[in-house]
Image (cartoon, rainbow, N blue to C red; front, top):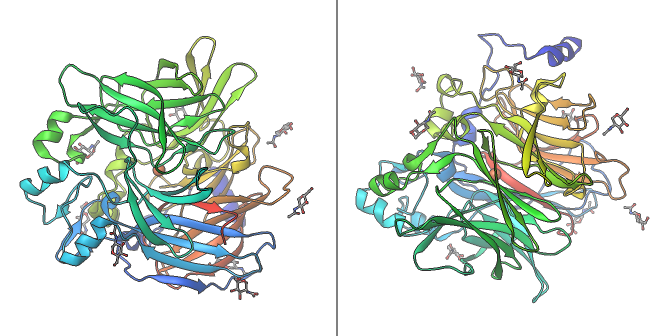
Length: 515
Ligand SMILES: *[C@@H]1O[C@H](CO)[C@@H](O)[C@H](O)[C@H]1NC(C)=O
Ligand SMILES: *[C@@H]1O[C@H](CO)[C@@H](O)[C@H](O)[C@H]1NC(C)=O
Ligand SMILES: *[C@@H]1O[C@H](CO)[C@@H](O)[C@H](O)[C@H]1NC(C)=O
Ligand SMILES: *[C@@H]1O[C@H](CO)[C@@H](O)[C@H](O)[C@H]1NC(C)=O
Ligand SMILES: *[C@@H]1O[C@H](CO)[C@@H](O)[C@H](O)[C@H]1NC(C)=O
Ligand SMILES: *[C@@H]1O[C@H](CO)[C@@H](O)[C@H](O)[C@H]1NC(C)=O
Ligand SMILES: *[C@@H]1O[C@H](CO)[C@@H](O)[C@H](O)[C@H]1NC(C)=O
Ligand SMILES: *[C@@H]1O[C@H](CO)[C@@H](O)[C@H](O)[C@H]1NC(C)=O
Ligand SMILES: [Fe+2]
């Protein structure tokens, strides 16, 4: 144990003959079983205050009939949930999302030629691919969220992908309800809406959420545009602002503060010529290692847009954002310096250790400080100021949500390839952004943690007073567990083995009033 701690401080010990990511391939293999309310047995007591339901979106099925997906992003969505009624019990459920895409595929025993990011093996015909271009992505495998409908006073649970369309679900049974394709405010015929975010953000002080939709201009000479949208309920949306852009860029998430929404457009561009030539979205995406990030800051009350730029990088997940008394916006995000974290999602690469280990997939925690007086952006990089580099290379971030839009210190996330050798060697880390040396790492050999959720203790006395929930995969035993981790020490408090093996998951949320 002493040796292990020493290793933690100086770096990751690696021997060439050891396997550190045994069983990793299984995360990208189907599990078609479904389960409802299976009682889990924890090996230690649960905190008496832990009450609510944790729901995660993820991947479930990788092939139908003789055809398989080739990219993990395209695989069929499957939800998992853990219900904590607050009496020491926990009930696990997992079910497929019964989307149109899923239903038609199962009914025909073949993958239905709907629009997807990469493709299938054997491939669709050119005719099928072009026909798919006219439809929308239907597979909501990225996130789960909840909107409040002030008119009906109902909570509406929705599952999302990087597109405008979404599905409603019933959260207690994980039953798929209907698809929702809300009307886009101010939509004009010469535009086709392309992308949106699977990471809407609450609008501070309201029950609304902020979202955006990118619209492609179909007429040469007319610019593309990004509309900033206020979500009042699943079906009710209004436009806050609109700005024109020269290039269509992929944007996964954005930052929101009390008064602003800030959009960082990384130079990950959609080449329209290629899109219309190949009818394959992935082939049409081009990343520039040199172009700056275009930043658009939108005032929520007035819709005023300010354009800025900052240095090259690929941003996926904003962690948090807040305004300071000093007229600044502070926002933090992991930044990638190349496109590898997208390219490694090819299933054949994920299945082959030699191939996946070739990828540098490290994220670098970065702070962007926007000076509202000068409209300029300063950058602070966390990765060189720490005694524990793994903690500054995390993505899939979670924070104590009571600190959203406020000054905060702690972020928890997943670090991959922690030894810079084995891609599948993951850790769950805590990073102290306030500069104190309290960074910590949760790590078990051959065990893959997934995105965690921080549940604050009611009446907690510090930002890290609560528990972290994370589903883990043990690649030796080929089994999943849900673990509770103490955020103060990053040690396991209690664990329960799940009745089935779960493929890789994406994002999730805990709903404290749902049980
Ligand atoms: C806890 O509550 C759930 C739901 O009300 C119930 O099904 C379960 O039996 C209870 N467990 C215990 C140990 O009381
Ligand atoms: C898919 O089929 C299931 C029944 O198998 C049905 O309950 C569900 O509503 C269908 N989904 C859609 C989007 O029609
Ligand atoms: C990433 O994948 C795309 C699509 O296969 C390919 O065109 C591109 O060259 C790859 N980029 C890198 C840096 O490997
Ligand atoms: C994995 O990829 C390597 C090339 O990088 C290849 O030599 C090897 O045969 C592949 N392994 C499998 C099981 O396909
Ligand atoms: C941070 O450290 C790395 C390696 O230790 C070095 O290559 C890089 O230049 C440093 N970056 C900054 C901004 O100091
Ligand atoms: C960091 O250390 C300083 C000085 O000891 C202290 O004032 C501050 O509260 C600490 N911050 C956190 C988040 O622990
Ligand atoms: C939290 O504090 C409030 C008032 O201070 C009290 O009413 C409530 O019971 C406390 N909740 C818990 C779970 O301790
Ligand atoms: C519970 O299981 C976890 C994970 O397997 C383990 O780390 C922990 O030590 C176990 N706790 C007890 C009390 O057995
Ligand atoms: Fe995401």
